[in-house]
Image (tube, rainbow, N blue to C red; front, side, top):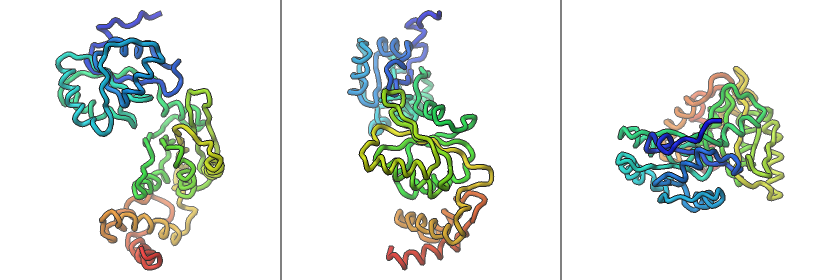
Length: 309
């Protein structure tokens, strides 16, 4: 049995990013416990959540808890790096999982690297790999896309990319949008594309739903209406078969009409119609019914006249 790390070994670098449990407290590593006890500063996504974690683990610490979130990370990172350079032991944690992975921490990492300040990671629980393993989908190659964009144009760009992506893809989504997103994905990638939706991972009511995107969209819509969709969701989508971009089921005219909506969405962001058409045309995956920028421009003009957009 390996002896616990000594305090000096724990803090061979002044900055440590540590993964916290994503649900089950039993996943807390002994290394994390020791780091929480011996840190001088704990940079937290939410200090209240971290205090509750310390209480739940019955850990006493003299560390000062400082917030590190998306709104103050730029300024706070500079301060923390200066303190780390002076020898202060700084532990970085998020509310759940690994800091910097769809959570604050990346700016602190780059600031430390730029300043030549040493840092390391204390690994642990991950919603990404947990959901991937439970999905039943291929795991030999996968990509992680973080939270699905809320902005419609960015979301459509992501879906266009996924049409020809051959690796399994892992995404995060909220309970309020998961049903609608599944329906959109079924339309964009094809109803038969295999997928899995996981929620409450490692907790008592852990649940994994598996099936086609069409099946999952129908089930999630029903659950949404019942008010039984709770917790954070991880969506795992099978890769496309080689040469299958999901859009081949659409005729060229249908594809043009679908993409024309995306073109018009980009004009609302201040992009000229002609430039927006060129952008969307260039983003189309190879294969399927590719639509030229000229045809997209015309389709968007007609749609604008018809809808008054």
